[in-house]
Every structure is written in C-alpha cells, then in structure tokens.
Amino acid sequence: MPTPPKTPQEIPFDAYLFRALHAAITDAGGVPQIVIPDPSVVIGPLPAATRARNPLILNLSYEATRELHFGNESLSFRTRINGQDTPLEVPYSGIVSVFDRETHQGRSLVPLPGLRPSTALQPSQEAPVSPEAQTPPAPDTAPPAGLPTTEVSNNVLTFPKRR
Image 1 (cartoon, rainbow, N blue to C red):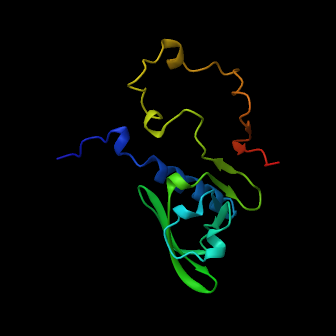
Image 2 (cartoon, rainbow, N blue to C red):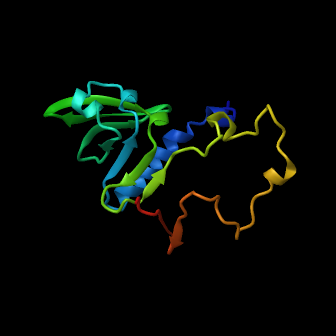
C-alpha cells in the first residue's frame, strides 16, 4: 500500500535546506560554517570559553567533523575541541546563517520580522489574507527596504559581504 503524501507540517524543510546548503558549499570546494548567536542552544560539552563566544561559528567541513547527520529538528556531529573528541547537536532554530568561510557566500536564515514559523507555510488563522497578499509580486518589484539583495549571474547566486 502506498504511503499517503505528507502535509507541509510533516516535511522537515530545515533538514533539506541545511543539507542542500552544506552540499553546495562543499561541492564548490568551500568550507561550510554555521553561525549560532546563542551558544547555550548547543547540546554537548562545550568549554566555557567556547560557550562564551557570541556569536559562535562552527566549521561543518568533512575534515573538521565526523558522523555529520542532518536530522529533522537538528544537526549532530562529532568534532575535536581542545584535542578531545566531542559530540555536539545544534537545533536548526538556533542557527542564523550558513556560509562558506573563504568566499562568505551563503544564506542568512533569520526570519522576517512578524513572520512566525507556523505562518511560513500557511496563512494565519487569526487574520484573513487579502487577495493582494496572495498575488506574487511583479518581477521588477524591489525587495523591502533594509534587506540585502542578491545577484544572479551565470546561475551563481552571490550574497553581499557583511560590512
């Protein structure tokens, strides 16, 4: 008997997104790194000095990790910290950026203000969505003020470097 299709709430989009970003950076010969603004979300024995860093930047290259696993809610891996083999787990909700250490190309994962994760896939039950909001913007519409823009050239997506 075929498996019934999954609903949007059952699909682990974060796992697919992180796996794809990691693969794209690795395939391009880069070093994937993640930015964690609150190191207290990391599950595992981090030294106090490492946990005090704000933000915490972790190297996710295959050379720096072992047993890298992209689960439905978090990623887990083993790495060496102060010469000790250390298992770590990081929930996707605690990661704000994935980027290549050398080129700084990557993806910011910070949600837009006022957008809750539960509303990202479906309209809010609290307020009806107007027909104008459901219509996709015209291709020449500029992004909201204050948001970084990207450039696409020869099928390469380039993100602006941080100031």
